[in-house]
Length: 96
Image (cartoon, rainbow, N blue to C red; front, side, top):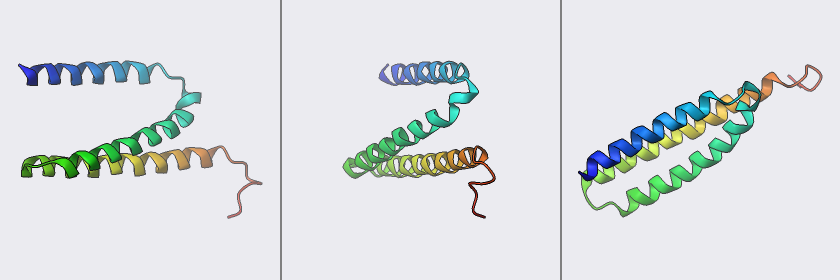
């Protein structure tokens, strides 16, 4: 029963997140992505903590996977944000 509740909570959060993100205007995407990168950094810290406290081997593997995926999210978010911000720089401001 507990697993069913967890799956339902995950599905509800995913649907709500999709609905909220789809309603955000394009102008706000870059600032929101920067904020989400900070939140993803907190996710990395949580994943590292959970992995460090894990006892079972399966839990440690799941925690390691969580750390790797969260780091991919952080690095990808910063790369995309940097690319978007470079689009808004003027030609005079570019040194290369």
